[in-house]
Amino acid sequence: MGRLLVIDSVDFQSIPTSVAREGSICGVTDEELVLLARQGDTSAFDQLVIRHQAAVYRAALAALRVPEDAEDVAQEAFVSAWSTLGRFRGDASFKTWVLTIAWNRASNRRRMRMNWWRLTAPLTETLLVVASGDAPDEDVRSRELRTHIGRAIETLTPKLRDAFLLAQAGEYEYDEIGAMLRIPVGTVKWRVSEARRKVRARLAELGYVDA
Image (tube, rainbow, N blue to C red; front, top):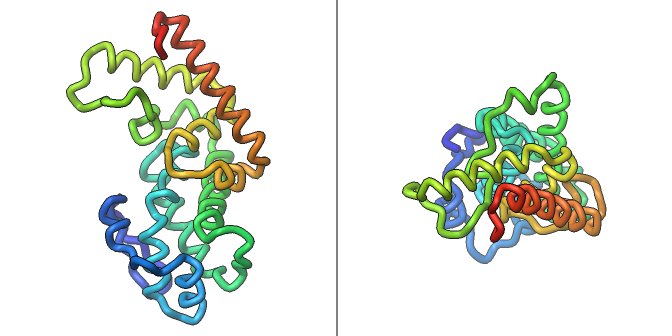
């Protein structure tokens, strides 16, 4: 994520997750930043972007699987959040709110595409959380396992796949996933569990008994 995020007259530089987190204002809550931003403090909204841009981008990527499209949606989500901040009631956290905006926009873009899933890029390491210890120099069997995991995920229904990829991203609580998908937390847990069961079953069929 290296693109410039522009909101009104304010520029927000997209930067890697590790740097973004270090750049956040320590000890200031999101609620306090939202209050300041509502009063016209653009630097406060800048900090909200820095804190949550990685999570928003990854949610969009889970839906769209094309980095460029995910960056566009992430930018659109923050632009929308900035322009409608006065309507943010605080029923959920700011993070959950902007994630929901991003997911809705990503879902709309996905629906507008014909045969979108076949045309998108393969599942990437951003989306796949596999066996611990994977590294660029992983052996042939590890690479084969990664490929089979990706293919197993491809066979899931869209509802199971969305819940699974969001859970595997490691960025979101179940209530945040529920808000994005507009389903109860219990349904989120069931979908994630069922998706994992199906993926493991597929890998077991291929001889990965420890999957």
